[in-house]
Image (cartoon, rainbow, N blue to C red):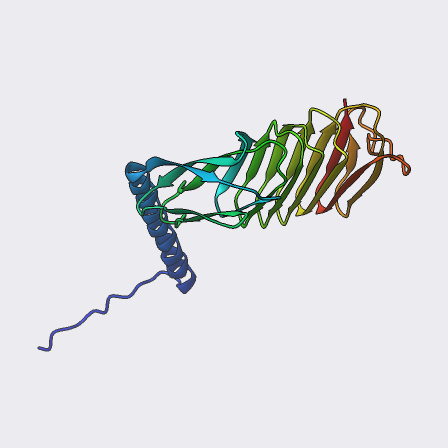
Length: 257
């Protein structure tokens, strides 16, 4: 008598089988991602590199920082002291510092998907009163207590935050980041522009009045002093100072104190 063969059929519906496959893939990816993050945390290492860059006779200092985060503080005349914190994970973060003419260039590279938290944060002590231009592609820029001169910051996708400034003029332009500025003394000019982000600025009251232009396509222009939907700096078109704040998508808060 011939042996009878019984087929083994999967009675689940095609939709159920597809769903189980998707769920299994997601779980596998999450597990692998967790293993990568865990291994990166175990392998995380931070080293510090310091360097002094002699400036000589230059009229302006340009800092090209690429993807590195930058913090500016006031230092000695004629020299820029650089202190970089370099964080690595599964792979080592590349870091190079160079100078050509009036430009200091910071080159950093790490694969954040493979080494979460990797990157470079550079603190630069800069001379008082020297006009400074900072450029980043994706790094954040901070500055504290700088006096005199002009500070200009441009970033592709980083935040800009400056505090206790005593500069004559501050200008910031970022593609997709917030801009925050507080001044210890009245500047002549404040110009802030972001395609996608909020702008907040506080300027001391004083003798100088400002010609103010503010614009936001999809956000509020708010007086943080009393909550009115207006600007707080008076808008004196014949004033001796200039304030320009524009964003395509974000709120603007201007105040004086």
